[in-house]
Image (cartoon, rainbow, N blue to C red):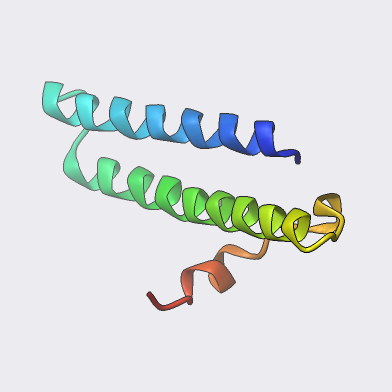
Length: 81
């Protein structure tokens, strides 16, 4: 996945988050549904941001960004700030 596709996917997920919040506010979905879907989106967003950062680092250090693969969500989510 190239940088533009990763950024496009991030934009799609941010839009999906906004839609979920609007759906909750309008009563179209309940809080449990919103929380579950937001959790899924947040995990995938974290994975995409990790991939994007690692691809940019590969370019910076002369490596092939196309060789960088997404890490499993469990690995990305286990990082500490």
